[in-house]
Image (cartoon, rainbow, N blue to C red; front, side, top):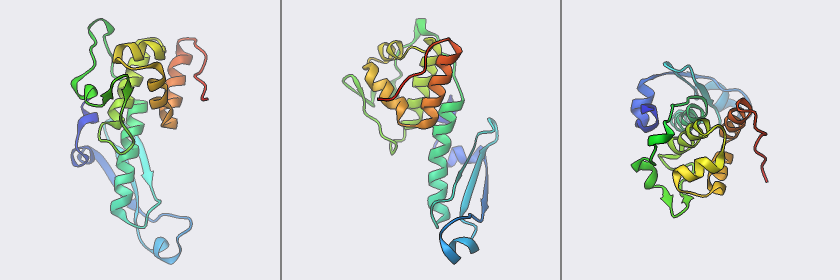
Length: 169
C-alpha cells in the first residue's frame, strides 16, 4: 500500500492530528501544556496516541512510528503468490538470509506489513513467507515478534485458517 512508503509529512497530511493535555506523572509542566498527540489516519480509521514526552514534537514522532506499525498490523494488501518476487526495497534490507531492519529504520513498518501480507497469502505459514522472501523462518518469526500488534495479527491470520497460534520462545 502506498502509505507504507510515504514520508512522515505526507502521511500526516492524510491524518487528523489532535493535541491535548496528557495525564499521569510529570507534574505541573505536563499537566498545563497540551503536548500529548493523537493521530487518526482518516482513510483507514487507525488511531494512535503518544503522551510519554513533554515535547509535542517528540510525541508526534513517536505517534507516527506507532501509526506505521499499527497500519502494518491492521491493513492487508492482497498478494498473488504465483507472480510474487521480493520487492526491490526489501532486497535492500535483506542481509543474506536475515532481515536487517530495526524499529528505527524507515522501512520497518513496510517490512512488517509485507510479512503479514504474505502470511495471509500463504494461509498462515511462516516457512512459506520465509521461502518467498528468501530468508529463514526464524527471521520472519523474529520480525513479527518485535511488535505485539504484529504478533497478534499473525496469530489472528493463523486462527482464520485453523492453525495453532505461534508461540514465543
